[in-house]
Image (cartoon, rainbow, N blue to C red; front, top):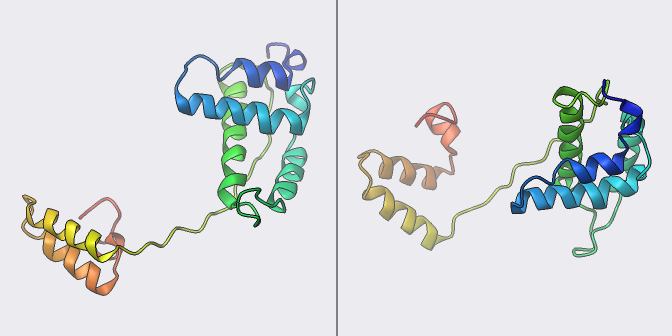
Length: 161
């Protein structure tokens, strides 16, 4: 390993995600600096980021109240930073070889979002399907709209149709 003890959370979290200027990279960099640096401390060696410390952060975060909604934060606002931390620590271990082991970081299963089409959306969808090269598409969509069936249930698998 490349001197695991000298890689602090600060140097790693500020150095690693910077190469590109894309919006998603900026967002990831912001999460690393604003969420994880305060949680672990800037001078903490990467090896001090343990599963127990991550679990403690997660427990605290799951009881936090959102400033915007005044309700408990969503699972997504807990899971996204956890998934990012897990990805960065795996990168430190597998690609850069600056971390001996990666702590186990578990993300919670999120509920799927249930959304119904508005009538005007359903009409637009059917109109587009009727213009399709697939002659059965409009019938399949109309059937699913009337029965409330999802694509998976109609076709047997998510990737076929």
